[in-house]
Image (cartoon, rainbow, N blue to C red; front, side, top):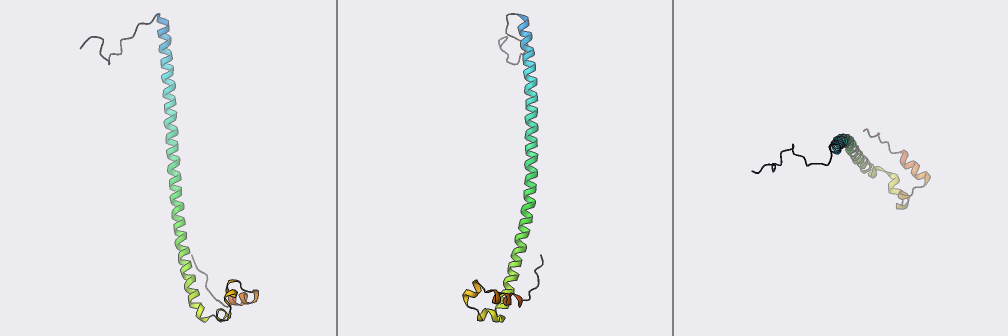
Length: 126
């Protein structure tokens, strides 16, 4: 292997015209490296904070999703219950057999009030 060709040898420096410029360049390099180190550190910190924020948001969305699924389940159960109450009430309801189809869709104040009053339905409990 030829001398001076070793790429790991950091002691070799190209000659510069004047020692002061070399010293000035070294100071600039040190300052640039320090600025770069600080910038990289800040970047890593921002990246960590962003990851933490996304993790918290994900956890909150999971909780909200679970609560909404629970609500959907309760509402589905309530809809089934109300449907069964209606099905069991329909054969007994004199108001439904006497009312015209238009009255069912757009009940008059008197007939609608009577029909709703005579259905005794317990409140659905969540």
